[in-house]
Image (cartoon, rainbow, N blue to C red):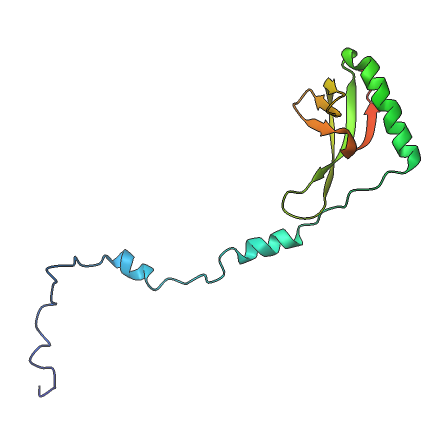
Length: 137
């Protein structure tokens, strides 16, 4: 052989005294795909998530809710079973969603204008869309 590197071709691989040899797994990690847009798909999913806007109640609906509120103030100690539809504001973007809870009334707080349900759900009066009294079985 009369090659340019014939004098070093069969020498053992040099080992550093200062740096340990890198494992094959660590070496392979250097060449793994790079995700330059980490979090981008999560941001797109969040933007695509739909929210509802809070509905404005007409005078008839407001009067109905006021009557129901008065009824609950008077009969709340009987702990009736209620079905309440109310608005939950989204913490990340404008709007929110309407949800319904069905449980026994635990407590009504007239000064805070809140209703506390048996499952621990607290509902502000201004977020309520509808209150129904469920019949006992």
